[in-house]
Each structure stands twice: as C-alpha cells, then as structure tokens.
Image (cartoon, rainbow, N blue to C red; front, side):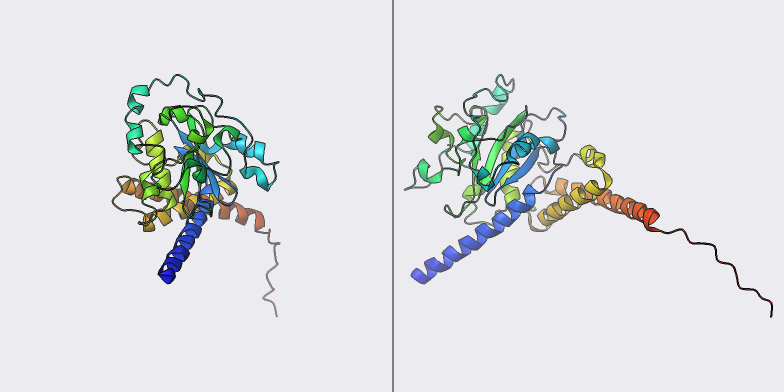
Length: 298
C-alpha cells in the first residue's frame, strides 16, 4: 500500500515539474491578443487578461509597469507589496457589460475549492492579493497561476477585479485569496491537463465576447518589432503553439483556429529569417578586390 502511495506521489511530483516547465515557457512569450503572461519566480506566473474585446491593442505591454516596478526587487519579489484589493473599482468600476457577466460564476459554482479537510488558509498563494505589486492596465483582469510544491498541483487566483467575476460575499482577504474552481484544474489530477488548458479557460471566462481563439496573436504588434526581436519572439511563439498542436486537445473548438494561427506565424517567422540572413549577408560580405587575369602571352 505504501509502495503504491509512494509511486503516485512521485508521479504527481513529476507531473508538477512538467507543469512548471510549461509555465516557464509561457512566461517568456509576448504578442498574444487576449492575454499577456509574466513569469514571476519559479512557481508563479501572472496572467493579464483582456476584459472586453474592443479592438484593444496588443497586451504585449500589459505588465510592463509591473515588470519595471519589480525588476529592482530581490528574488523575494514573489511576495508582493502593492495593494489592489483596496480598490474595488479597478479597473472597470462601471462595467456596462454586467448583464452578460452574470452567468459566468456558474462555471465555477463557487470560488472555494472542493477539497474536504482543507480550509482556505491551506490554499493561500505565496502573497495575498491585497499586497500585489502588478497593476493591470485598464480593461484587464490580473490572475495568478502557480504550481507550489507544497500543494502538489496548480491553482489559479484572481488578483484584481474580484467583484467582476465572482460574488465573493465580502472583501475579507482570506476569501479573496481562495483559489478559483476551474474545470481544467479540477481535472488536472486525472487527465493530461497542460498550462494552455488553464489559460484558455481563464481567457474564455474573462474576455467578453468569449474569443473563438484564446491564443490569437496580434500580428500587427509582432510585425512592428525590430527585426532581430521579431525573429526571436515569433520563433518562441511558434515553438509554443506547435507544441499545443501536437499535444493539445483536438476536440477543442479553437484547435483549428490555432492551426491557422500557426500557419500565419510560420510564414512571418520564415520571412523574418530570410530578411535577417539578407541583412547579415550584405554586412558580412567583403568587397572583393579586382584581380588581374594572368597574361596569355608565353
């Protein structure tokens, strides 16, 4: 019995390590249309998600303020120190889409996780939401996605706009820091759930109207990048989306949309590569001095 339990524990640890690897990969990306990830420490990722799709510009800069603010902090910056919870109206105090949001809490049923024997203080994030330093831009909601070793599995927390998504029944920080009850996280222990499953659920839950492809790219933003940066960014995105194409759930409604996105991104990446090579060739190619032909005379 103990042998079986030990084997299961090792498998869960290995699974969590794979999740953290996915988390690190996702945290290095930029250029998505509906969300922007920002890796914060080994076990945490902040996810800025667009509230309303109003042709809003790419969230490629969505957490730049948070990044610049915390760049001078030590590695202990995983414990945040800026208050968002005290601002109940941030960033959409008078959201006109209220009637469309009402059904959304039913996707979670409750913000409290279904873990008998656990109280919410056992499932707190490393830092309470009221001390969050990252400030989402207007028309965005901030989430924390983490895979803490002490919990042995991933969880997601709302870090701003709690009132927009869930009726939490108060402003007590302990209640606000209860993890979200997402289907992808509930299924994590029994199914092959990857980080993109959690991200797509958060995007479809948060963004109005729900996007047909939560992983849509802002091609205009990508094309605006300097050549060398565009090559690196497009290559990293291509690696992530191609991994999704191989291992993602083909039954998802947005799977075919991602395939189309990969084709467009691959064309951009190849075009950028050719342009990089042309520029490097024109710079590196030395001017050959004229060499006189040998005389044919005897």
